Amino acid sequence: MPSYQMLTAYWSTNELTTNGVILLNMMGALVLGLLVGYERSYHGRAAGMRTYGLVCMAATALTVVAGYPGAWFGGGAEHGLIDPTRVVQGIVSGIGFLGAGVIMREGFNISGLTTAASIWASAVIGVLVGLGFYLSAIGLSVLCAGSMMYLTRVEAWLPSRHAVAITMRFRAGFLPQEKALRALALARGYEIATGTLMVSGDLGKQEWRFVAIALDKNSGAPLTALAAELNNFDGVEGFQLTHARN
Image 1 (cartoon, helix red, strand yellow):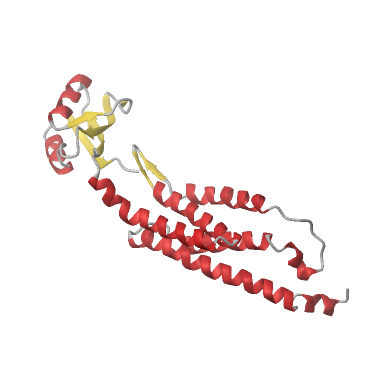
Image 2 (cartoon, rainbow, N blue to C red; image 1 turned 90 degrees about the horizontal axis):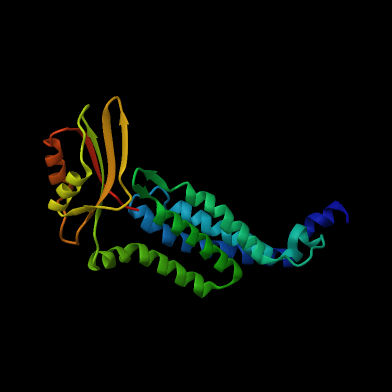
């Protein structure tokens, strides 16, 4: 085929129509991705509207392109039927790396899980748009955004127990007792979670890390009160308190 004919093939009516369909799908996916990402951006998360919009739009583009193999390379190359499920598998695998990048762990405190899950959901929304399931894509976008905005209120209403990650550094020569520590926690409305106690030592000094869980929703001294007590606790050289969340 002469070069000018190859060039015009890319601008044929069929090619322009196909590109128009792909562009419309990408624009719709961008809007839905921005809808989900707004909640994360509003709450100051690292992954915001742009991240979600790009993920959703790119996932849609890859999915839609797989549905038009006859229009590839200006329609001048022969291709067999493309299996869209392989494209979806590639998208899901690739998003896993992006999601892992927003998950952070510091001791017992894990953050970013909700953001990672919602990024993965954003890719699924893009796949749904690419496959033509527009109503399902809109529904998933609304459900994702609604879950992140309103489920925290449901969680606050349901019976729950908050947890506190505690690190205690003891002075040299001081030997803390686990039984006494558990009794002190119980007196303040907490119990030490089973299997969370970690003990380390260096130069005669011990450091204990554990998670204390409130006995019920209304029990458990606040962090400021715990900090005031630990500041005057005999044998404690330093400490760190933080809400154990994910």
